[in-house]
Length: 243
Image (cartoon, rainbow, N blue to C red; front, side):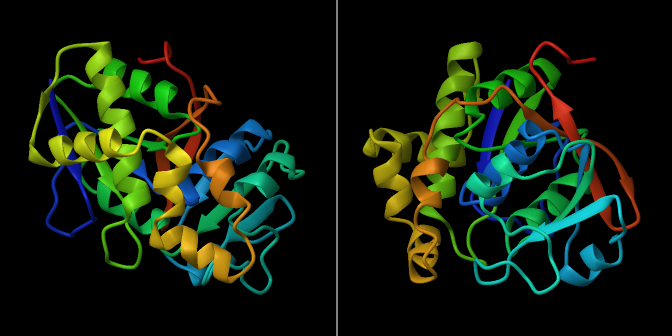
């Protein structure tokens, strides 16, 4: 089984099999928490305008600009807020600066797209391994076109666990991510040093960082199940449900 890690999304990337999309601070962590809180589905869209087009009585809007909740949105992009949000049975439409765009890159060609974070790392890796026939790719969202330490570290955690699940053949990007994971034994240290964490600190949301640094706290994996318009539809899945 090939294992690859791409440190940033790019239009020319092609994925033949399974992709784990990582935006650990905070989109993919928040997505897991929204489904944990009972959301029926997540619609990931590439822009705030696309999100607003879905707004109605049964739909909530979640997202961020500069880390903060956009005007007119119901929720920001805080996983702590998401876990307690009254989203039971509702569709949540999300647009964020980095994560939702990375998911759209993956979805152009991949057979399966999963959202992964430290929070659901083991479950996401297990489901990816169950679904894959030739390759598992990990796509890091980065931060505004630059490589993110937080996402690369998370990719290393995922890659290491995938190696424990069965024999894998890591490509160079995966080896770099594995080296990064081994350089920081404490997830919170790695995440706290990232540009994403520093940006949250600047807007008073630094409490989200230790939340995002929790490893394997959830068995929920957001799995791409379809599309409507510009939206990618993610629903709750668990390891053991492949097929």
